[in-house]
Length: 248
Image (cartoon, rainbow, N blue to C red):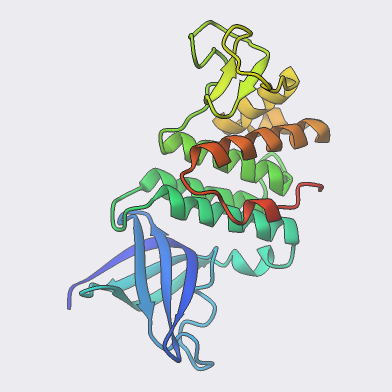
């Protein structure tokens, strides 16, 4: 039987029969893949916990008619163990893998940018940045902004998204996709603090140094804007997003 090998982040698992599981993963070269892990639920399974959600693995798969079959797994980074010990980290990781699952809807369609963003976000979530650790909400918001941008939903955080007038502008409209001028803003448009918008720009570009001294109130305001933006522009809402603890 033909086989292939790839690196993958495990997104979710489902029980199959008495001892098997269906593993949904985002791979580096083959996009989203679903595969059967035979006997993984037995205590004697050779896979152990390597196929738990959030883990980064090197995996060999046998091509099947409907679902591929896991032939071999090597653990590269077992992120599931430390993330499960901290509720904010765990819920942030849950939102990340759910978002990745939605943003790569077609199986076996290469999505290397989405894979790199997810693997990098989980690494930062578990180990921090080279500039030091960051709150789970901050890492999550950066991932969501960048993943949506890679999928074609990049927010405009400078110019007016409707008329193109040069910014800065006072309003942020999640439904319109970013900043809006006073002439274009719909009723009820929030006017966030300019520091919050600068903070979101830093998250969007991955400028972690610029987020070092950001005030918690700005992080919370930015999280609200990101959550509204994500809820509006993803076809299905993220069920795990309301569970995210953004108080720490």
